[in-house]
Amino acid sequence: MTVDSITPDRVRALFDDIAPVYDQLNTWLSLGQHRIWKQMAVKWSAAKPGDTCLDVCCGSGDLAQRLAERVGATGQVFGVDFSTEQLEVARQRVRDRYLDLPIAWLEGDALNLPFSDNYFDAATMGYGLRNVADIPRCLKELHRVLKPGANAAILDLHRPSSPAVRAFQQWYLSAIVVPAATRFGLTDEYAYIGPSLERFPTGAEQITLALQVGFSTATHYPIAGGTMGVLVVTKF
Image (cartoon, rainbow, N blue to C red):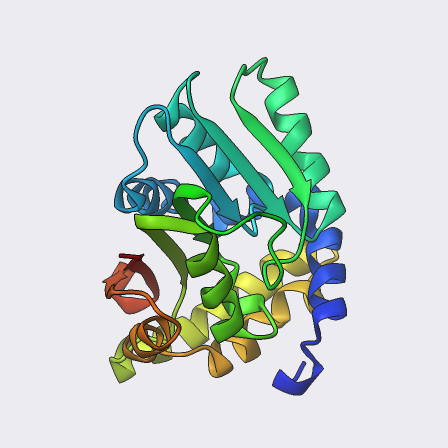
């Protein structure tokens, strides 16, 4: 799969296809560490009890659930994703766990969020920015819907700056991730990760893009040896 083949329709189809096993694969392939990284993103979003929060590209709902637990019964969380299958998994997970959380699940486009300006107290995004068709526009939409003083924390895979770590990441993707996905019949669905990383801006480039669309401050935190990162942005 090439970079040019990663179209918005293709990405939507990929995430629909992997929805039934998305959580299981993420847990296995990250050795359970994705839960820690998501909790870090929620913390850096600075969401607090009573806040109205947004989780963009919410997928199966992990980050949205963590946000909802943080804002409590007096708060509200909106989980938005363009994959109907991922949203159904998110809804079912909450039902299966008998959770009473203040979450509304909405099908929507990260490049055209269905909310008014200055609406949210905080936002998160997990493994979504790398997959949108227009990264600056996505960041600009996040800026638009956040209230002045609000943070957004954006978690994603990254290309490490260290050649040695980069070589390990490439080996891990080709030797571990894709073969594991193949066992689930999802070879193509996970083979796209490598090409998507090649076009994804580095942490420093993400900071520049965030400032260009209007965020007042932007900090990028490399984690997991630089194979992951969280971009934290603030709107003043």
